Length: 415
Image 1 (cartoon, rainbow, N blue to C red):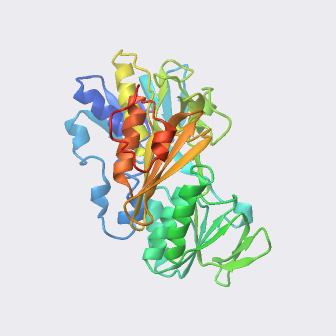
Image 2 (cartoon, rainbow, N blue to C red):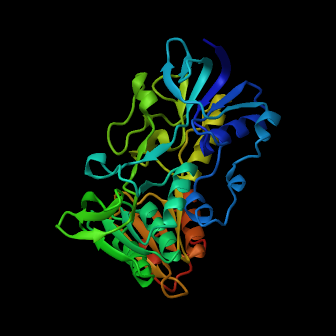
Image 3 (tube, one colour):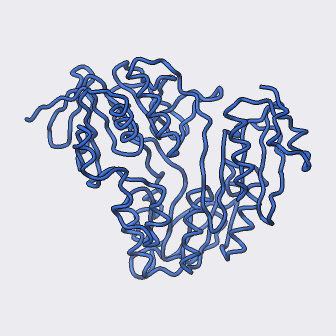
């Protein structure tokens, strides 16, 4: 059995892992660093996968977060195609699938999340049913699209709607199926959902809301042929894309006894300094669950992966600066860019401000009179304004936002 050791071992080779290693090196940290990735590819960016990369507009090499030789030049170890099967907290080491053990002084979990699968017993394992997460997933999907004609998108959240937009731009017939009462029900208000729904219908997408999928049915060729709905209807489909949420990759943490969240997709519980219940183990990115605005949150975004990694770099340098982000996200659908800042959980008032063009505008969320989030639909000026007020913690009056003649860029606010 082979043994090795690194002062800092990072499990996971995504955006959070690379940002942490890069930040430490940039700040002069000389400890030995090893990144362990399960995929055979070097660390890569994921947002372009279902867009530019799937459409053929981006070569694979442009996905890489860093040139392949950057890791050696930065004195950062990188193991790809290596799966960690266990964490031995008592022995301060990780165990790989091939039996190798690697010791650590500090361990970081940056294992990300994975798509929630459609149940295999209900047809989720049929050929033609796809999840979108990694390069190999996109490779399988791209090959299948050459033969597909009718696409069922299961799930009306951002992932599903982005996939629907890409499929329609390819000229395919697309049906979106959302079990909740409406699309974007968990993440956006009625007005935002109405505008996004109108956009998709104008592009020819068929939308069914308030109806779940009871089974995926095998067709004549042994692959997916139809989708059966809860209300008894059957819809023809030769390819399905499943976008029904994500689960934190926290199995290693649970198996070694770290405190994890039991609800809402799981996640490793960490404090404001990214520390888990074991002081030698930290977690960042999609897998980390932490307190944000009075609730335990797990953020799945490039922004959070990068910012939380930089926060952990400060922690590892001995600087205690609790991570308190203003989350921001984006979603590209057709020619609409939906930009979100803040968290709208608990909002009790929403105000819509029309944009300069039809089909554009912004939704401003308030909770007990305090501005907490904004959705900007192809309205970058509103987005930048709202994001700035959130970052500054400014007291923004709902009456002022509701006045269409009021310039929100003016500084007449008190912090």
